[in-house]
Image 1 (spheres, rainbow, N blue to C red):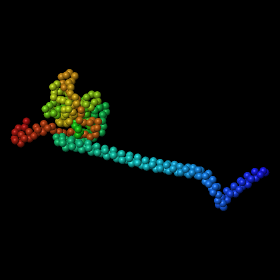
Image 2 (tube, rainbow, N blue to C red; image 1 turned 120 degrees about the vertical axis):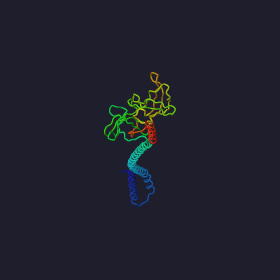
Image 3 (cartoon, one colour; image 1 turned 45 degrees about the horizontal axis):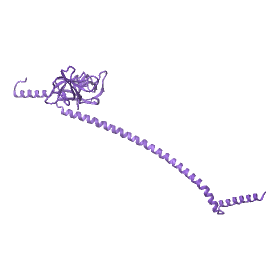
Image 4 (tube, helix red, strand yellow; image 1 turned 90 degrees about the vertical axis):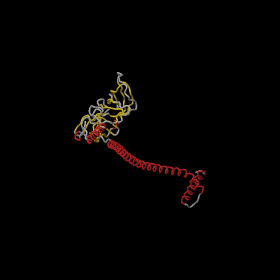
Length: 293
């Protein structure tokens, strides 16, 4: 073995001996400590970073799971509140409609009314009809007027024991006497629906020079004998002459929203104001001993 080889073996042996002594704490080798720290520190830093990242990932997924569970609970609570809000809105709307009907009933002293719920629309092959939940067992008869708080709805077209079919004024088959509310006009005509499924009404059979203008309010005249007078039909939106140019006609926007009918009232009996005046006159004549004509 050469001299260089012997020296190398001795150097390695001394290095291992020193390293062993340093590990066992029998010798302090600052330069060796620094070398070990220099080598181990970056590795340790990476290991700590990896460990921290792993903890962060675990914490993230744990937080995500918690958030998902809380989100489900919040969605359930929101859905519950939304349903409760819808229920409250429905109750409020129904109370409002019934309150309006009650107000109408209190104001209509000359009418006997029975409240009914709409339980069907466009019954069978007949359009512009609704089905209500009272019929002949409740005293309902054909041709009785049907109203709601907004005005004239239509007439009873057919009765069954516990239901009735109502023909809406929007139907061309439903005709009612109409009169202009304006005191200096009082033009009368016939009101009915227009063909084609439109909700616009028409008033016809008026003289060519009839005093009717856009914006006039049309009421039931009561002249036909089947309907009480004074029920609001709608507002004139257009006035023109008929095809022959001999008579005047008008288009009317109905007062009733027929797409939102839910409760109505059937006029089972009534007295028109003119009947009340006549009745008062007859009573006065009877009290004075005069003849009743």
